[in-house]
Length: 393
Image (cartoon, rainbow, N blue to C red):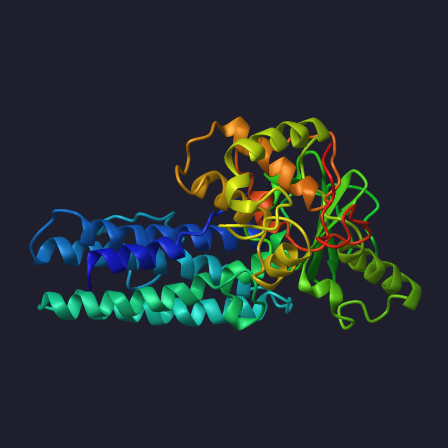
């Protein structure tokens, strides 16, 4: 098992773990993930470090096992130390499954437990190996099983693992946050919408939404409603989640979802920025992309053809930003100031008929940009119907 490949595998597992409450199923789910991180960290350290000899590798494997199973398990050996919290991934999962009730997250936790046991068996095998190649093969199998414990935030049920359970069920609601009916449109933010134990939405104040989006939330649709941003999960579209809600109630929720595609996306830039960006474009960009932005030596950067291509390629604002900030001008990439790049992005957004607002286009790259699609803007009337562009004056 090569160190580089192992580090890549480990990096994929080390998803962010937000802080949780002291005693709750959510706290146990987060604790289980933290112990998983500790176990993977031990594997990475021994493979990427300078320790040599059979004893060092056996010690590392014992520490991995301790983090996975916890001190109440027969496989726990205290003398080797514990990089986790002592409860172990298995201990946290057992506490969650000790409840007599069945929850929407139960299948994911049951699947995670089965994969923890499989990973622990792989590590036990590694402890008994005498050849380094066999030891590394066992730990590779352990990492594969640990990946299934972590799972994916976009998947519910057994395949979602712990991350999926946190991203799609009530398990993802932090302590102290208001919980509202997941079968109704949110009345105020912040709030988590729950229906039948499933997480249907997270409503956040618009001014802070970009910095408060839960790391493990499975976002299906983003809707801007006045001063709030509502992040809907796929459960919001599932009629089985709200079987007792009135038709009118579900209708309002679906209309709210439909609003995401019926109105222009909210993008940050000001009219004065777009005007300044027009001068930047004329100096550094026009020779390749043309006065009408339809392209000469380079491709079109605004209008019907550009927006259709962007939509087909599933570009987001983060992609457009990366192309401009990192690769332009073509003859001298990265040569403009951050402010110049921000201004020319504002000009391109205005030329593509995105409405201006009060917030300037930033010189930084907010995470929210990865959730703003680029494509034809609903409800707009281009000033040049032939090219599909809007004039910037």
